[in-house]
Image (cartoon, rainbow, N blue to C red; front, side, top):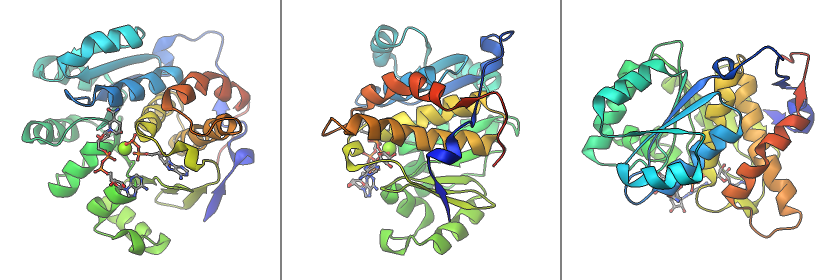
Length: 280
Ligand SMILES: NC(=O)C1=CN([C@@H]2O[C@H](COP(=O)(O)OP(=O)(O)OC[C@H]3O[C@@H](n4cnc5c(N)ncnc54)[C@H](O)[C@@H]3O)[C@@H](O)[C@H]2O)[C@@H](O)CC1
Ligand SMILES: Nc1ncnc2c1ncn2[C@@H]1O[C@H](COP(=O)(O)OP(=O)(O)O)[C@@H](O)[C@H]1O
Ligand SMILES: [Mg+2]
C-alpha cells in the first residue's frame, strides 16, 4: 500500500496557462439535494467551485434554488425534476457528481439509472452518499463513464457486501475489481483503490467527523477531475488536500467545519501547484 503524504501531492496541480479560459477548466454537473438535505449539495457545489472548475451546474429540488443562488452565485441551477434540461446538461458536462443529499426514493433510482446509461467513456462520474446506497440495493448496468465511488465504511458494506470488520485491503481489492471503478473508502486513513494500486491517505483527523464532510470531498473530486487530465493525480490530490486543510484548521480548532475547509481550498491548491507535470 502506497502512503499518500505531502511530498507525493507537492507539484501535482498544474500551473494555469496565461492564455486559458473557463472552457479549459471543465464543466461539472452536481445532482442531489432533496427537501431535507439541500445543504449537502450546496456544500458539494461550493467545494467544486472553490476547486476551480470552469463551469458548475447544480440539479436540485426547486426548494433549494434560492439558497443555492444566495450562497453560491457562481453556480447555475436547474430543477432536478426537469427531464429535458437534465438530459441536455448530462450531455454537455465533463464530470457528474451524484448523490449528496439525493434521497432514496423510486424517482431517485430512476434518475440514477438515466445518469448511468446516458454518460459516455469521455465523461467522469462520482457516485456518493445516497446514490451509493441506492445502487447497493438496486444494482444497475455499469456506466460507460470513468467511475469513482466514494463510500464511507457503512456505505461500502452495503455496496460490496463486506461487513466493516471484513474490509481488509485484499477483500476490498477484490470488490474494486468486480465494480471496475475507483473506490475512495472514507474513514480515518482513507484508502483509495485503483485497478493498479492502493493508497492510504496520511492526512485527516477526528476533527473532520461532522455532517457534510464527505459531500465536500465529492465536490472537490468533481472540481479536480474536471481540470486535470491525469485522473489518478486528480483523485489523490483531492483526497489529500481535503484532509490536509482540515489538519491545518485543527491545529487551533476542535472541529473543522466543511464550509471552513471550502474557503481554504484555493489557497491550499496554490501551495501544491507546479509548472512541471508530475506523473505517479
Ligand atoms: N447537511 C446535509 O444536508 C447533510 C446531508 N447528508 C446526506 O445524508 C445522506 C445519508 O448519508 P449518511 O452517511 O448520513 O447516512 P448512512 O445511513 O448512509 O450512513 C450513516 C451511518 O453509517 C455509520 N458509519 C459507519 N462507519 C462510518 C464511517 N467511516 N463514516 C461515516 N459513517 C459511518 C454511521 O455511524 C451512521 O450510523 C447522504 O446523501 C448525505 O449526502 C449528510 O452528508 C449529512 C449532512
Ligand atoms: N476520524 C476521522 N479521521 C479522519 N477523517 C475522518 C474522520 N471522520 C470522518 N472523516 C472524513 O470525513 C468524511 C466523512 O464523509 P461522510 O461520512 O460521507 O460525510 P457526509 O456524508 O456527512 O458528508 C470522509 O472524508 C472521512 O474520511
Ligand atoms: Mg457521505
